[in-house]
Image: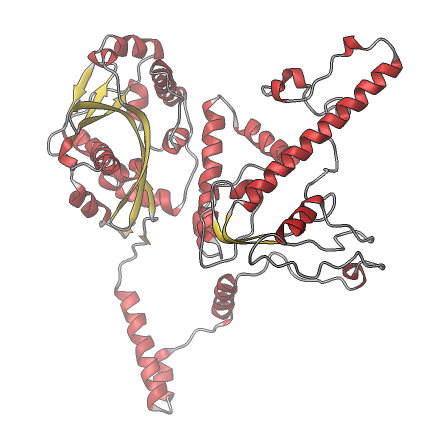
Length: 488
């Protein structure tokens, strides 16, 4: 979308940028699943930024080739050989916060009785107070209990931080932060400083008293450009500027005037390149991205030119009532199976629906009745909404399988529910690429031969299950992807 993946790739740290884009798309899908609109989503993003500092980032990959800077919350579940915890200064960590979330003193906080974790929080009952004096004492006591709870949360966070280190832990503080006056080390730092004396190999450095004077950063501020310019981006801009400033060269005339063999050789190479370009057709070459959805494979097989145009110039797709109806049926079915619903990005942006399929979709109630009357309603799937990412050659294919049934020991069948009309002939052959990918992906997930997994479409309206013959195997899928680059 908007070529953001391409923009990410030319910047340093593109791996984490790609993951954060995927995380953002997941949040968009979750919001749309609950009936949210685009305007509502934008408003929700604004509130999330103001109230919580933005959405939760993607999970962090531990890297051994870089120093990673991240929050303690983001580091949960990961471990590094060495971890540094800076900023162990009073009121910073443990943090006292600029604004209390005590619901009595902060109108923006939810009362304890309305929270899901109310039984784990301090509480106050106003009916127990008979006069202003007892009320004030009760409020002060509640405030102290609330502060103690916040302090305990900070200590738990500190435990998370120190347990991220496998070999070495570095804890630091400073006498000055952003203000003019010096600050004392925090209680956490004092705890660590006291404990390190008992640890073999532990070392306490420069534990000096608080100095008197003005913050040196205030007297001599350090200035710089942020964000730091990427050398890769700068090189691209430099080349672009040179290209814009260049003048047209008449290679033939220059060859006549060439004064040395070296200059003549360069000009002959230039002439050969120009001739090669002229001899090519006027087609524009479009290369597939290295991450594809299953629906993209269907386009690649049936309408490669249309796919190339979509890649070359992405455009939003209108989601009409028929597409929503298909999504609603899947949500209903997932609820029927007592499983939380998940929507793929293809469903969200309606990339895989054709006009004919939309026109032939049956009303939701008829779809429900038809499915309940089918043999599948009597069977229990072992998996539904199975998300996967599978490498085919050098391309990552992602998708989501509607349902999986066990047909025998290490034998499975993947099912895709269809709300449109039954396909046959070339249309069925093209649609079967979807099943081929699901079949291969599930075989890899279960570490069984692909021959142990069968695949079928179930057309709900017609109560007909179709198992296409001669489904593509992994080598056939590789051949399909190797059709690139596409020319338009």
